[in-house]
Image 1 (cartoon, one colour):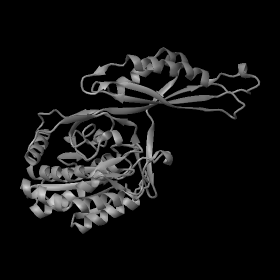
Image 2 (cartoon, helix red, strand yellow; image 1 turned 90 degrees about the vertical axis):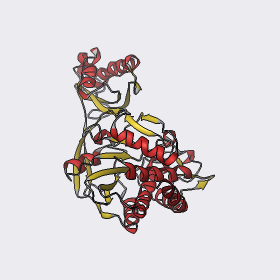
Image 3 (cartoon, one colour; image 1 turned 60 degrees about the horizontal axis):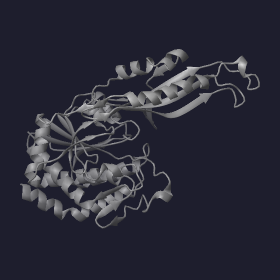
Image 4 (tube, helix red, strand yellow; image 1 turned 90 degrees about the horizontal axis):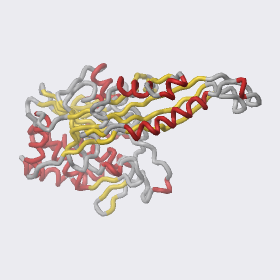
Length: 394
């Protein structure tokens, strides 16, 4: 079977390259994934996936097999913006290939992973799907804005809870078994507006927020180092204020705080940490986690901006299955990595405790950069791993 998987994936090398380039060429900035989702849906239908459909949130779902054990694979179709076009060496929407590397927005994050996943389903059908397996493919939306939102909807509203999940985010062909989480926080101070000509008659909310910003800068230096995820970190990433006009004293000031989480952090401990700061107490500031509302033309769904960390121990049965599948296919032991960024695993493992790992083509360092790229060889090897795991999952 190992040789059969290798042979079939090599035969599909050109096809998966062409498909990767094609979907890179379809812009799919978060919130505008419809066109690329439709193209991937067409490919799944061409490959005889079953029950292919787009749900109310815009996620594309299909399956191969109908066994009792559901192994889900997730790849998000949305990408970040391109930023300053002048910083790109190649057209971000050309899907240019040079020296066996494909370039463009989303190449590694993560259209390459989606392409490999779709083609692994084709090979799986040629080999023969295990009778007890449902190979579930989810091509998700809005991950770049609200990681895990799609799985909160799928589990809670569609009542689909797989036995295990593989995320096709880039891992340099290593197995990711942990992810650092994050929480978005807002800190708001209130003042009293007055005319800019008579500032002493008001109470400036901006002056109240300034000491808080400084103390958060100092807090970052004192945050502990975690043996799994390294140093915790906190940053002020946005400052806003309101007033009746630019010639009036601000009556509110709000900062956005990005707090990256270690294995020891919870939502409660992080909020307590901020509320305990002297500057926050002195200003009587309000600390809260914003709640967002995902909205499309005919649909809305709430999400709280908290994305938990998660860890899968290397002796967990699912991690061991992934290790075995890798070893069988490639005749070598896999390396393990831990994502420093947040993924849809914040929901699958972090919220719902579904066994979750990551494995994807491409190097994480190129994600969200003008160098976004994926090696062709990675695409082929990812196909092999996904197929091998589906066949060897215990």
